[in-house]
Amino acid sequence: ELVTAAPPAEMRSMAIGLAHSLSRYKLKFSPDKVDTMIVQAIGLLDDLDKELNTYAMRLKEWYGWHFPEMGKIVPDNLMYAKTIQKMGVRTKCKGLDLSDILAEEVEAELKDAAEISMGTEVSEEDVANILMLCEQVVSLSEYRAQLWDYLKNRMNAIAPNLSVMVGELVGARLIAHAGSLMNLAKQPASTVQILGAEKALFRALKAKHDTPKYGLIYHASLVGQAQPKNKGKISRVLAAKCALSIRVDALGESSTATIGIDSRLKVEDRLRQLEGRAPVEAADAAPAARPQPAVVMAADTDKGRGYSVAADSTLAPSGKKKKGAKDEADDDAAAAKKAKKAKKAAKEGEGEKKRKRDGEGGSGGKDGEKKKKKKDKDKD
Image 1 (tube, rainbow, N blue to C red):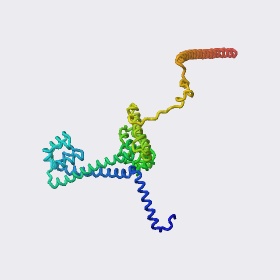
Image 2: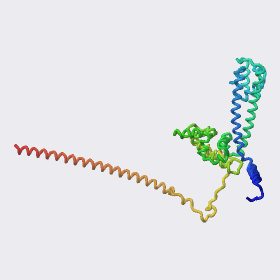
Image 3: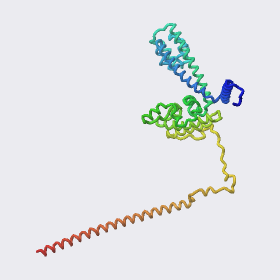
Image 4: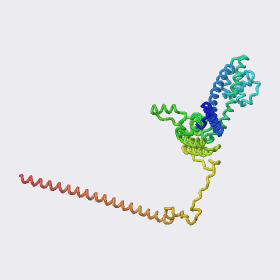
């Protein structure tokens, strides 16, 4: 309405251009706070782990026909692939130096097993295809290591406090599950605690069973250190501290860990308390803690308005206190003696009453007998 001369088509293109410019400005405003990279990186990392496991399993099954003993001697996938790349067939293992890949004991065991192996012979074409698969395993492993370093750096830049609390991997999974860091910051601590266990939660609510105590946060190192009976309590405490750390990361302006260090120390103290261990001293536990400003009371600056600290005490002085304690002990002894006398007098009174009742009963019986005898005599 402001520009009347422009046709509707130009107004539409102008609005689209304005929207694009605004979106670019928002993205450029804080490029370090773009958490989309974390969501994509953690998803790719999970996919790489699945592919690596599949490729390594296929490689061990394939090469196992030629050298079956090697699978138990070299369990690591990357070392297994690098050893096959350098060795080829098992007959060459005796004259090779594998010290740059394997430990000395493992290398000696592998060479001994290669001489007495029960595997079948393979052709050169088979070995060529196996070596190509080894190259894929090695390249994927190296790329995964690079991707992990990238994810770690992005997490330390975007969510440093959350990374301190639960680690980069678990923190990235929490952000990816919530969709973004801002969406995760809007969640309460109870939701952060069971994030990732929604299926178990709704199943428990439907069956009216106990709800789960933890979700993705179970893989944090602090929960792993706790005993099985304390995992639920530690996960609840950790989720409460994580919720505060996430909000500081999402809404704060600091690019370093601030509240996360102190929160982690508190969770560790709680873990020691549950396990019955002594807490760590504050000076040893928090060497990098920020110094707190000293609090100066107004009464300390103005001596005229000050009050006597001794007036706060409600206890008597030491001399009077000893005397009062002695008097109190004497009073207790006198009261006990008096109560004993009263009890003795009461017992004596009860015995006298009993004797009187017995005497009255006996005399009454004698009078009755006399009257009966007198009546019998009158009848006669």
